[in-house]
Amino acid sequence: MAPIDGTYDYDLAVIGGGSGGLACAKEAVNLGAKVAVLDYVTPSPQGTKWGLGGTCVNVGCIPKKLMHQAALLGESIHEAVAYGWEVPSLNDVKINWSALTESVQNHIKSVNWVTRVDLREKKIEYINGLGEFKDPHTIIATLKNGSKKELTAKNILIAVGGRPHYPDIPGAREYCISSDDIFSLSHPPGKTLVVGAGYIGLECAGFLNSLGYSATVLVRSVPLRGFDQQMASMVTNEMEEKGVKFHHKCVPLSVEKLESGQLKARWLNTETKEQSEDVFDTVLLATGRYALTEQLNLAAAGVNSLSESGKIVAEGEQTNVGHVFAVGDVLEARPELTPVAIHAGRLLARRLFAGAQQHMDYDNVATTVFTPLEYGCVGLGEEQAVSRHGADNLEIYHAFYKPTEFFIPQRNIRNCYLKAVALREAPQRILGLHFVGPVAGEVIQGFAAAIKCGITMEQLMNTVGIHPTVAEEFTRLNITKRSGKDPNPASCCS
Amino acid sequence: MSNVICQGLRSPVRRLAVLSKTKAISTSIVHNETILVKNNDEFVNKVMNNEKPVIVNFHAEWCEPCKILTPKLKELIEPLTNLDLAVVDVEDNAELVHAFEVKAVPAVIAIKNGLIVDKFIGLVDTDMINNLIDRMCGKKKAT
Image (cartoon, chains in turn blue, cyan):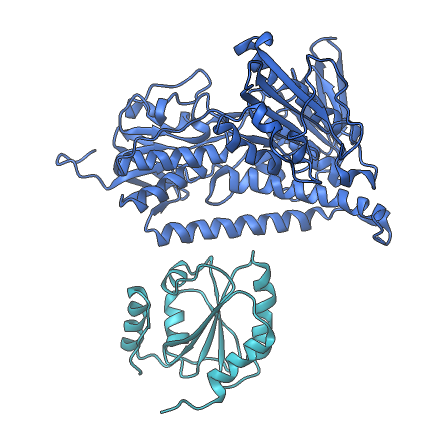
């Protein structure tokens, strides 16, 4: 119960020790606030759990990028031969799954530890318990041993993020894994079925395939829904050409365990109405994520601004209850990205404790899909731009390109493509940039700043490229879709 | 029992230091065996109260350089009769980590008569370790 004289245990209590929660907590403490952070990981259906740091550190961005890198290194070993490296018994080169997961998990544990030490240094109270509201200013944390701890706070931040969604089909929870489990899987995944073609499904299928584990993807509607679809098809084309099998317009029906220990998955093609099945060693569900709002007992706080999907609607990160805020993946209609949560969390802390006015700008947030051939983008996709501005008011510049390094090992260049979506009227302000190719994340990052400055096609075309890079291809854009001219490169340096 | 002057450290170490003054326990440390520190009391008894100088190695299982340094330290120190080695697992000893401001592993802190006489962070080569060992037990202190 909040004390009558208005003094609370903490100036800020943060429920969720992930990217958003920790960023806000640390900034708040820097500004003189007394802060507590609650963090708790409910084990996955397969029993996986992890330490402090949230999804990104433990079962998201970090292990994903490491496995993506492992996959790329495997490809590099083969390419090296074309460059003259004498690689003995190239056919014996294979991944040791447990060595990989051990390295990845060791790194994660070091990050968990540094995070805990950092909280301790900054005198942020860390409570390893599952938080829920008792009343608008009181939170109850249930610790692992069942005991409860109560705390009151003047401001409360909900930063609980989300967890993988399990489809309601037989065998899902009993036999299937999710991104929660793949990065610490105690045995090699073997032949894997990935259900879902959002970025999580595609990234997992991508690195698994490159590591040598056969991957099949079930796509319910379209791959990378919400992303520019032309770019999405480049990504999936590349994956197919690398050996990943796609079953489009298919939904899973059931997963059963065979005597051999393998899993038999059945699925339905919603167009042809045909049922199919196959046997896999692993079935990885990547069918979306849901926000962990149900267990918060939001009613006790009077928070009722929930969307249909259970996420929190919070303009300016503030819920309908003035002192209760939300940040990160738990928010409705905001990009579910670590840097978004971190930035929004920091700005919120400054508004709460330093009288700052600046609000989070959720537009033009750059992102990258880390499939073996990456897709980076910032701003609007072509479909979005067309629906917002009308095709007549747009000019789309595009090009295929050939990375210099790809020639020698004869790497596939068919899906190396980029495009700029701009307003047609001079100076042709750029609305979106899209790039499929190596190191797409590195390529797009700088352009995110350019978009923030309102870069135009005139400015882009007047920018001198760095040679030889793949990023310079943006400065070489000159062919429009409207012209109908061939966007394939004649040669480099011309 | 020497006075404990913990240079530049915060009160938790002084707290440990006060404990070392009040407890008059005769420790029966097995010579040459590495001390595996499991809690604060053990640290105070076997490290702060040790008549011999002690090299304290902060270690973590998930830390690759630690897996190289810790066995190396054991190899060089266990044969010595006038110097002890204590290994502190950072996951099990959060308070010690905080008291000694350990922010990265591996970390090595040399303690003589309850005083910190040296500290280094990260993996170092055998020469540096040997230098440290010599300084801890070889040479006489200047008066």
